[in-house]
Picture 1 (cartoon, rainbow, N blue to C red):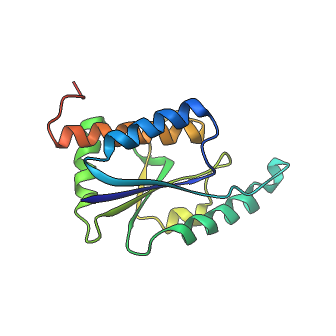
Picture 2 (cartoon, rainbow, N blue to C red):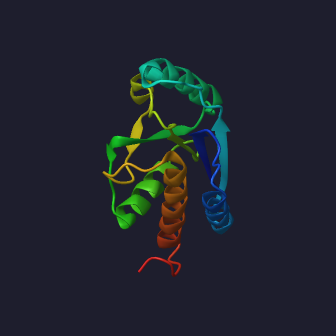
Picture 3 (cartoon, helix red, strand yellow):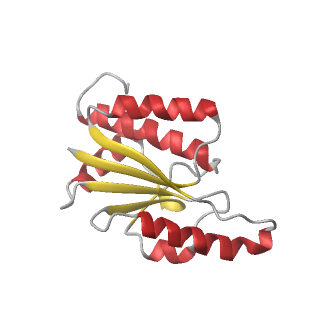
Length: 157
C-alpha cells in the first residue's frame, strides 16, 4: 500500500479546514496509508527576518523527513497538472522503491531556496497563492481525486 506523508510548517488552526482535511484523510484511508505531520513554525516579528525564519523551518522539515521517501515540495515554481495528469504522476511517483511519498508544505513566509535544491520533485497546485492551511486541504482533496481516478471510482467527472 502506498504511504503518503504530508509534512507542513505549523498545524491547521482553522477548525473548518481541519474538519475538511480530516474528512479527506478518512476517504483516502482505503487507498493509502496517509498521515499529516507538522513542524513548529519559527516565530517572527518582521518581514526582515524572512531568510532566517525560512532557513530554520527548512532544517526542521528536513529533520522530520523519512530517509527513504520521495520528497515532493509544493512550490509556486512547481509543475502544474490537470487532475487526470496528477493521478498519472502520482502513480509514477508511487512506483519508487520505497512507496513512501512526502509532500512538503511551507509556512506563511514560504520555503528556503536551499530546500528546493534538495527536493527532486516540485508541485504547484495553482498559479494562485493560497494560505498554507488551505493548500493542505486542497492537496488532500486532489490526492483523493487522483486515487479515485486510478481506482476507477465515481468521484471525478
